Length: 430
Image (cartoon, rainbow, N blue to C red):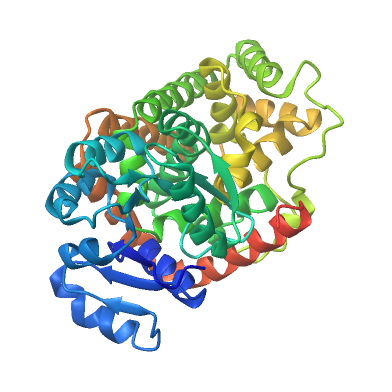
């Protein structure tokens, strides 16, 4: 470690604060800032971290730091870099922590001095997840080997798995692994709130698959809205995928309403073959087991589980098939929620009995029809807001649903963290 070097953090949201704590604990000198009105609060929060110096603004951070990380909302990256980029220390390295690299790279190239190296990074997990073993993308966009090796050394204190990509590869892969996953969970939360129900308080959403749906949905809604809006709205691949997911949900729901069993079955099995192979029951070990997940219920377990048509999962595979996505191809860049989502999806599709039960339930059982209707509305509405690039509309809808579920966040976050730790440990991911 070169003790003469310092790390700058511009933006002290949840991820910026996590980076500051981790880097300073590892021995790096950290210069950090956020909006002026947050200065006093940050001083108090980091008073026990002697290696962290809270500064008044990004100009002060930029002029004295050797490696500067912009940890700001993707939609604001251009404005923030335009403001502070000209103050960048001569010969420094600059990166960003946004989930969509195209606007980030554009902002850097447009607003940074030519002598500055550009090495974006992206931790593919939330601030509440232990970064050890999680994917960390490093992008050598404009840099010498020496500078890139320095950034690798700095980030090694997180204990993450380093993944080397271009900006274009990053945006395509994050769209493949995250965009539709988020859309599905956001739509479930919207449907449950529209029906004025906490699903774990009913006997309808019980069991391992349902536990993942509930815990990850609440986990997403307990975070900041912009974490998901930036990826969805600013990434063209993400827009396309979210739109296809809404179309898949709508078309499958119409087949259910029409009672068209054979067409529904043929479409479901066509998607299964495209994503999971001809037999759909390969020897490949399942990512998740239903019995492992049963212990992570937010509610009491009844003696009998109700059958569910799992429209959200049927539509997921239909969407992957339509877009030609094989989710296993990008496992190295997957987030904990996306691994969970793939896990419960393959659990359903690689079990012929469960899959046939879901199809029969979709045609013969109206128990979940009202929920499916609201879920379809929600998927289409999220897609529309994303397609229009409507950040304000995205935020309004997200925060309204967030407020509905807010009383259950502490319990759900604690249980969700334990679920992720247990599952990743059991599946060898940590």
